[in-house]
Image (cartoon, rainbow, N blue to C red; front, top):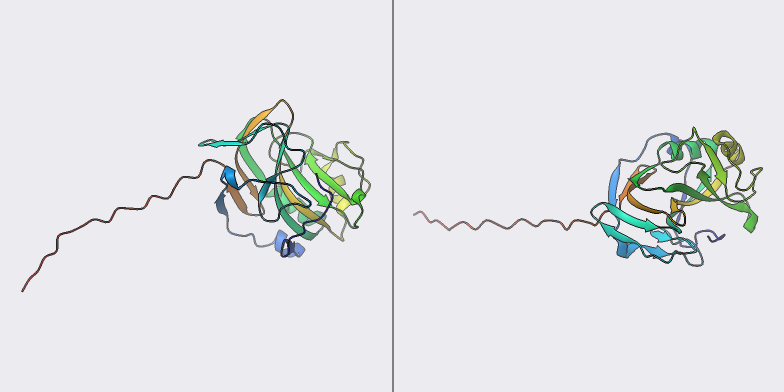
Length: 215
C-alpha cells in the first residue's frame, strides 16, 4: 500500500457535499477484463483497477461467474475524491456494495489532511461483505483520533472526517491469505463494474433479399 496521492492529472474529483448527497448519477455497468488489471506503482493508477502491493503469488483468473482472487490480494480502483466530509462519506458507503462468493472485505484508502505518511490509512468494515454503516469499522493506522486495527462504531469514523473533509483515494476489496473469493460486481458512487468474462457483442447478419424490378 502506497502512502502517496494519485499523481495523474485530472484524477481528482472535487465534490461538493451536495453533489454526493443529492442527485445521483444514473447507474451504469462497466465490464472489467482481467487483462486490464494493473499493479500499484509509485502512486495509485488513476481511473483503473489494479492489484495493491504486496501482490499475492496466485494470479487473477476470470470466467462467467466473475474474477477469482486468491489471498493475499487487494483489488482496488484508483479514484481520488477530495473534500469528503463525514456526511459525504456516509452517503458513499450507503451506496456501496459488491456481489460474489467467498470471503472478501471492502476497503477505502484515504488521506487525512496533510502530506506526511501518518495521514494515510485504509478504512474497512470489521466484518467481511458489502460495507455497512451499522457495523464497526477499522482503521489500518492511528490517525485523526482513530487507533490502528481497533474496531470502532462507524460514527467514530465520521467524527474523524469532521467538517473540513479528507481525500478518498479509491476503493475495492481484499482477500486474506488462505482464502479464495470470486468477485462478480462492485458498485461505488452510482457506478457498477462487472468482473465476469466480457461477452463479445453479437453483430447481426444482414438478410439478403433478392432485388425486384417493376416497370
